[in-house]
Image (cartoon, rainbow, N blue to C red; front, side, top):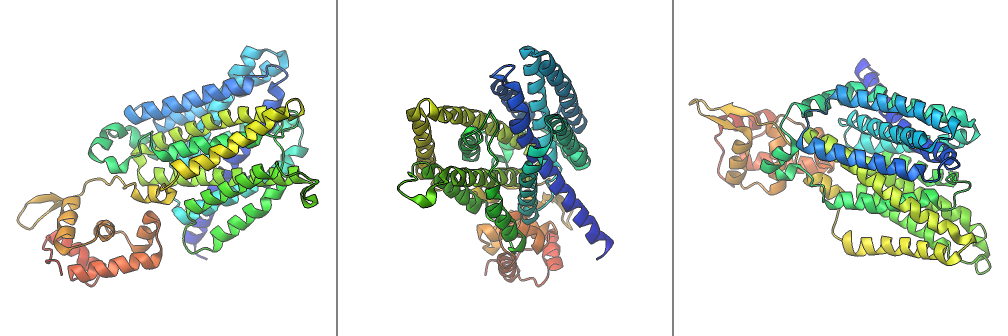
Length: 484
């Protein structure tokens, strides 16, 4: 194994650590910090979540229109400062049982976690679809396994980890995230670029974000449903299907389809909710239906969480000027959805006092899932959304032998029309004209290697060339043959 391969492995392991730190931090916030807040002020978690969601929403909107303030240094400093101030205020608030101080500390920690999450994702934009899916999946399994370790640690240790893990995320991702932010802050705003290249930007009203909002509600429901003393249940049985997912992602030759992850998440979550309505006396095999239900719900939640990071980073990687708005808006939808779902879970936990309220909340969650899939989700594809988001390429200006200047995009478009290339072939042709190879195109378009090779073969035949260099020379000369 040469030095270059070692560097790639080290970088991949670094990305896994970044993702694992993000997942573990979110779990510690819900399992260790929030239960401590309730005796001081029962609505601390809701208020801090509202402020965190509002901050993410503001970052997404402002960075979309005015990216200049969001330099790499500014975001990193803001994240570290939020974590430091939050840790101090949180400790004081708990020690003095002072609700206003505790709320301020919890809000600052939540904001710091959100910034760490964004910086961590920005540091992983160049992974490629297959490695991205594998990296996120491995990291989630690791963080899920660590939950049993966290359960054995003293509360103080977990609170320290809650503050240190997001700090580690920022420091690990800082080197690769800052150039992305600095470049975006020095360019035109995403809002202006979207006017001339609308197919390269996702509007905030896109169905993808609505899906994140809707199904993070289910995740929030799962966090609070069945909790003991305000602590989420630890369903380690969900590790089995999640480990299987890692195996599939590892040995599959192409990237795992995000739509497959979504379908698996829906099936597990629906099965977990339905199982609660099966009477143990009717089917003795389901005597431990509560444990099995929580396992299925945890598995569904985990699959969707993996899907969320997988899709958001894949989208952000295709268009760096809109990376921060996409990640911030996606995180905001996740935050709002989790908040709503958590309160539905709180209602469902009233079963000991009011069984009707619990059953009603479960039925509502099930109906929402079915209605969304049947009415709204029909025809929508995560893979299609990623594939259809055109990368925002810098314009390359060429000069003909006669001294006439023209853009590479115009030349490719004219040659594609003249040679009768299909829409997909024209897209592949554009990558080839820029010097990209088959492996790069495979990752960018999320298709198989053989599919790209077939497109390349058709393009060569229609253009009358026999090599990649001949194709590039033909584009530079501009002498396109007629369609065959």
